[in-house]
Image (tube, rainbow, N blue to C red; front, side, top):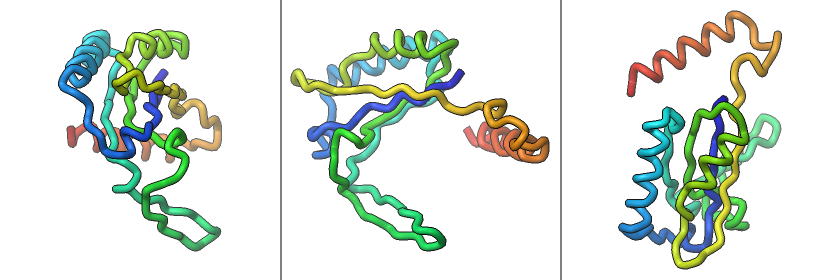
Length: 143
């Protein structure tokens, strides 16, 4: 099972404050541990929402909304894509992660399972599955 692990933003991350060398080192060690265990598939930090945009779909119309966005605690500051046998295993890994923010700041990590092809049932036709497999192979060849 794959899981998207999202680090919730804080006022510090939205202000563009960079982590210290100590936190970067601790995160590097944690990421290395997950890689060695075959758990980590990807992981990145994100720029503040002030450098981003949203596209809102209004029927057939599209509306672009420039950042920054309100409700900082609802934003994502970074993510991991991990592979684990269960949600419980994913939780155990994330309980071992360093606090993503320093200075005693409370932070939150959200863990959500990523859909696999089999989750979509008969609606995911053999043709759509073949297309998905071709796209995944193309993406893998670019890495």
